[in-house]
Length: 97
Image (tube, rainbow, N blue to C red; front, side, top):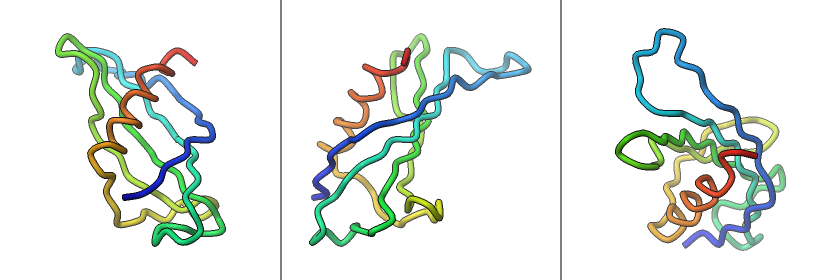
C-alpha cells in the first residue's frame, strides 16, 4: 500500500468546445508525499494526474496516472482501493478551488 500524503493540487476546468460530452470535467494535478522506504519514492516527488467527471450519473474518476515530479515521467503503478477513494474524496471536495 502506498502511504499517500496529499500536499497540494492545481485544478483546471476542461471545456468541451463541441458540446459532445455531458457534465463537467476537471483535470487535477495532485502533489503527494510518500515515505522514503516506499518503492514509489523518488527525490523528485510524485504527482497524480486525475481526470474527474461530474455528470448526471454522479461524480467519478474517469482516469488517473502517477508521474514523477519535474520529469512528468508516467509511473507504472496503480492506487490501492482505499487510496483511490482518498483521491476521489479529495477531488470531490476541491472541484471549486
